[in-house]
Length: 327
Length: 68
Image (cartoon, rainbow over all chains, first blue to last red; front, side, top):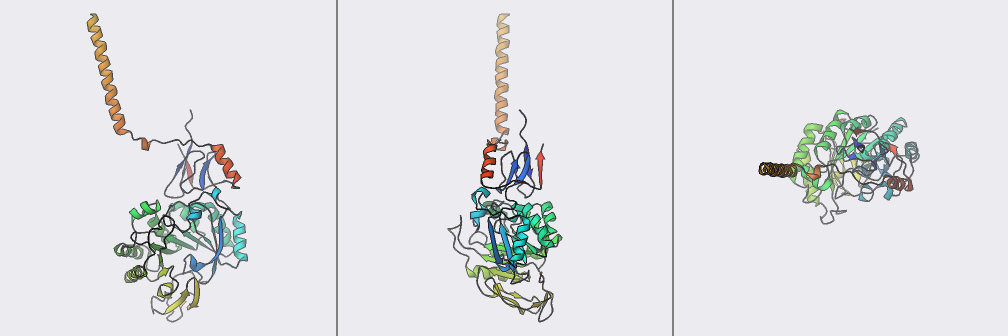
């Protein structure tokens, strides 16, 4: 009897080995007829227009809109996922639109959006759709934003990076045990992605959702901030987000405000220039301050920009260069 | 002569049994069924039909290799 053909997906560090008819851990890449095929090319199940601040991305065209898309599936299985109704489903189980790359770009332009955000689930798993859309979007003068857990192999990341403006990485914790037990993944490949993004010169922002009792240890948060500063530099914005109980972590309380402000204080002490708090409607943690003269540069209320005091990427007060993409 | 012959057969049987027991012992000790590739029993035409019914069109992906 002939040995059945096995195909190995090389897109993400899981590198799933698949027999005919079998799909990867992401639910959307399947071995069919001797080839690896994606089931979600041009088939988003979520399409919205969001303020770019909702991603959250704070250092790209503040106050602009991002045309946001997602397909079903994800290569991680976080127990706290806020989009589990699409990320933990097969594409046969979601209601999908037919929207090939050129339609995504046209819709983004028509809606007045300045960027396309590949978001909600994890764009790594609908890689080919992102790549082709990003190529067209770049030609049309739109920015491309990937909102991801950063669980991708270096080679596909490199190919995609040519067309990307922003890559926002969810650094879930600075702890491999957390990654294994809560997210079905590992920490090291995410750190490699962050280092590769720096080499590839893609603007990167980091999000860290702080979950009570699981990743709220201040020693660990300090260790993470030190690593960010030494490996990526102090201009990488970090957003500490408040956790709300959902999906499989309904038993835990929301993150106390003191924990979030404590984490912000640590990041500032460690020398990071742009430290934000998310899921908190108003306050210092929403705003951007000049690292040089400490004046308030961008005042935000929720997802909306109230005041903007940056011109041509420079602080209005002391002309210090503010890291980011402003025009 | 006959007794010697049956002794030889008896010893051979004992020796063969010993080899089998030792072999089984090592096989069990070294072989972990969890590491064996499990060929899943997938009804490929049914999978394809389900994909088609959902209105999905498979498109060849990037970044994969065939294992030899």
